[in-house]
Length: 170
Image (cartoon, rainbow, N blue to C red):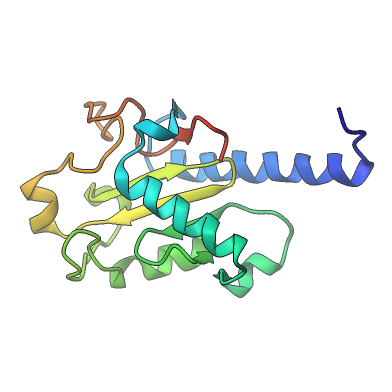
């Protein structure tokens, strides 16, 4: 095992705190408690979003909002429609009314998480999210969802929307 420096320990502590803060934010918005879901059981949109985000970090094409540069580690939000751009929670909330439906590309026109048309999945510090418009959601509310709904129903996968985590720790 590698000797950890005080800096390594401090960064790990801050990242754990940022992950806990993200889970609390999701819980306050009405999402369920964290449930671990193996990566191979995650919905296709979640695996693809995560893969594109990781690839953009690897090739250094990833961009981010300026708010992520201040105040230390914090939860990072990745919108499925633009997974190479990392944003803070405030910017994600502000973008909500203007985000497109991931299924058809039309405006999702979502006013708040309470409308139930947002799917959310969380890694240790990253919150992955997608929105769908009313017609796409009505056509198949469970399509592409992992594990559950706000009211406790189940979907194809085995976790919950809000606090789900990838089983590989990413």
